[in-house]
Amino acid sequence: MSPTGQSRPPRAAAAASPQVGAAPAPWLRPFEQAPRPLVGYARDYAAGHVTDWHAHPRAQLLTALAGVLRVDTPAAQFVIPPGTGLWVPAETRHLTRMPAGLRMRALFLRQDAARAGPSAVTVVAISPLLRELILAACAETVTWDEDGPVRHIAALALHEIGHAATRSIALPACRDPRLLRVAAALRADPADPRGLEAFAASAGASARTLARLFRADTGMSFQAWRRQLRLTEAWALLAQGVPPARAAATVGYDSGPAFGAAFRLAFGLTPGQVRQTA
Image (cartoon, rainbow, N blue to C red; front, side, top):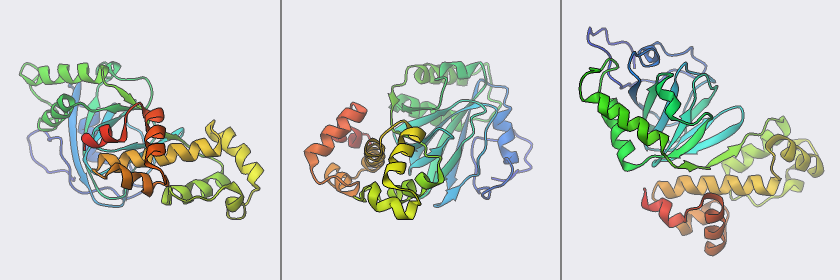
C-alpha cells in the first residue's frame, strides 16, 4: 500500500508489497504510532513474498484468513495456518514468508494494551470471537472514536488475547551453516527419509558432528527435530482442509494411527480436531 494522499485517517488495509531488503515501510507508521490501544491491519500478499529481518515498536498479533504465514525469529521458526495467530512482542526481530500467498489480518498493540499478551513470541489459538474482533478492528481507522463502540471491541479483543490457548507449532532454529543445509532439504521435503549419514557429504560434516550440532543448536536430537518439523507441516496442511491420511503421507508417515498418536502427543489435539477448524 502506498500513501493515498487522502485527508481522512488511513484504514487498516494495504495492497502492494515492499521488496525484500527494503527499509521499514512508511505506510506502517500510522499503525505503529496510533494513539489507540490497538488498531487493525489488513494486507493481502502475493505468493512468494518475503520480508527482510525487521522489528516493530509495537506488539503484533498476526493471523491469516487464507494461506499459511511462516515467521522466523532468531530462536525459532513458526508456522501460522488459519485458526491460529502469532503473538510478536514489540522490538522482536523477525522475518515473514508467504510461499503461497496470504490474506493477513493483524493487530498492532500499544505498550499498555500489549500487557494482555504473552511475554515471548507465542502461537495462540484464534477463537471465532477473536477472529471477528480482529476483522472489526481492521474495518476501523487508526484513530477510531475512543468514546464510541469500538472501545468495547478493543476491550473484548484484549480479554480474548489474554485467555487464548497456546499452540506449540514451532521449530527451534538451526544456526550452524552445516545444519542449515540439512534443515533446508527437510523443509523442502518433510517426508525425506534420509538419516544424518546420508546428509554428511552435502552438509560438510560427519553424521556424529551433525548429531552433536543439532543438540547444541536446537536442544533436540535430529530425530526429535525432524518429527517436530513433520508435525508442524502436517498441522498447516490439516488447517487448510487436507484429509489426515493425505497430510500424514505428505510429511512422511506410513501409518495413520502412528501419525495420530504422534500428533496428539505433540499438540494435545487430534488431526481431525485441527481439520474441523479449516
